[in-house]
Length: 246
Image 1 (tube, rainbow, N blue to C red):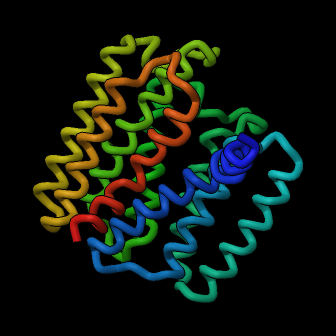
Image 2 (image 1 turned 180 degrees about the vertical axis):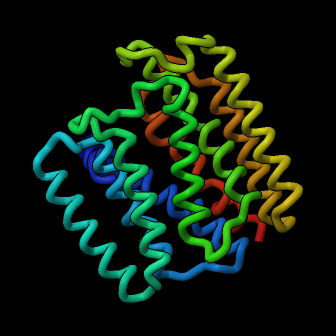
């Protein structure tokens, strides 16, 4: 049990696991676009890790120090290996992610129910498509936007009794929130089948089915690992399914 708790603290509470899952979704995209670079994957990981660390722990002093160090490290790598335009795109993504939960500046988009979840999908689409690719790929942008939004809805169902502000499930109900998630998963799959290479489209579509199953069984009384591990793992599944298919 101590080993399990240790792994939970190292991987989940540290935000390493969710950052790794997001990064491998980025790797999946970069490989499909034939734009993969090890350095770029490392930058994506550091960016997501710093972003999630800020979102969860930004009120604590050690987190602020960690985020400053992360900013310096990522900036140094980007300015050394990439051009200024690339760095500016990263800064834009950074600022947009920052205002998602900058409540100490009286800016907290998390409390706007009709913005919160869709904003997460928007930031992920910017981070995984607009930022790393040399040219904007709108098909991929909307695939990630709809997919990420869809798998974020269950977290709002989980937090229904914790949130002290109106959320999507409060406004339209739990079942309608799930229906919206199914719709978004369907749209992302249709776009994937139409615009992606066959093996990537297949891997993504299989994962969308898995996502729909997890969304269906999500509710407020599910154990935390259902969300922090299983739901988060949906981001890495397209990459793993592709590996198995090959």
